[in-house]
Length: 185
Image (cartoon, rainbow, N blue to C red; front, side, top):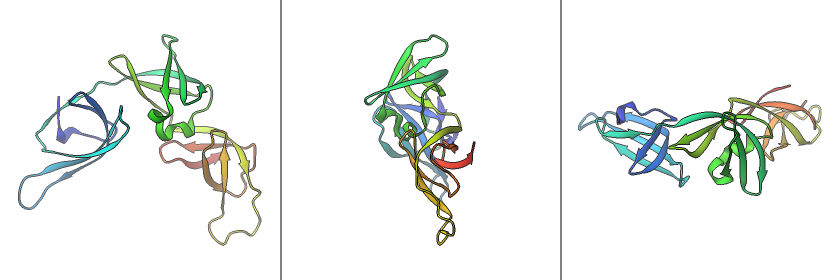
């Protein structure tokens, strides 16, 4: 058990049997009255975000999440298949559970699978991934009225803005936390 003061972004907590990941938290001290902790939590089963206020001394059950190394194998419709690197067991997650992370997975990428009481509840991607540019319009020299970027589509279907010198077939490095371009490989 932890107190609400101990909450940090990325922690997983158990509230009344439901697992939640802390997306945001703010410790608020008012001039009058007591302090409180305002949070934004994302349900790992429901995938919905909720806002909840806790008293600083309120006890919360900390959910122990086991992380294991795994490899992404393939996509089958809405399901994504991963292989546990230790047990070689195949585990499946739906596209809904992965959320925005589906934009950064490619075959054979190494990830961390997150298990709670033996059940797969999510994955953690590496900070940087490399993906191939599938579609890119040619950059026009002198086209710098706005920012000197253009829209490209990657092999995963994710689209983002990159510098004008990036061409179709190039491999680029992305930050999975922000989804932004980092460099060209």
